[in-house]
Structures are given as C-alpha cells and as structure tokens.
Length: 109
Image (cartoon, rainbow, N blue to C red):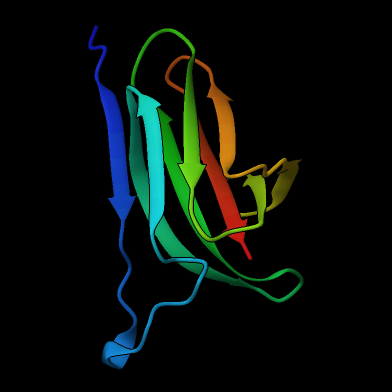
C-alpha cells in the first residue's frame, strides 16, 4: 500500500481569456492516497452554479481529504447530482473517506 500524500492544485480556464468564475479558480486537494477523478462546472436551477468534484480513496483503509479554495458552501451529492448532505465549510472542507470510497461534492460560493 502506498502512503503518498496527494496535493493537487486545479486550474480551470474560462473561454475567451476572461478570468474564471470564483467557484472554479484555485481549488486545492490534499489527502493521503486520494485521487481527483473528475471536476466539472454545473448549473442547478434550484441552487445555482457550482463546481462538482469527484474524489476517490485509493486505499483499503479510511483516509481524510481537505479541499480549499474560493467556496463557502459544500454538499455531498449522489451519482445523479441529487443532494445527500450539507458539509460544513470552515476554512475549507475536510472529509473522511472510507476504504475505496468515491465521493462527489458540489462546491459553491
């Protein structure tokens, strides 16, 4: 089993050279054996725009991941994007992931 710490800074470009929206600029993901397996902008008629981030625990024991960036709200969603739980945001988002867990979160703000 690997004990590597993954640190990823995600940069999203906006069309036409304009600055990216605040919800997609400069996200950072830190976690031991955690992989970012997807990231995309979303638009929800009920909740507004956001960034969907899919995180995968790449180990057979629990791990923790920390996401930081310019967001003030976060929530876990199911594979179809339906809200499951509101996640507390305090100077970023910290999530406990179970073994081999895939978690999709939406970041807004």
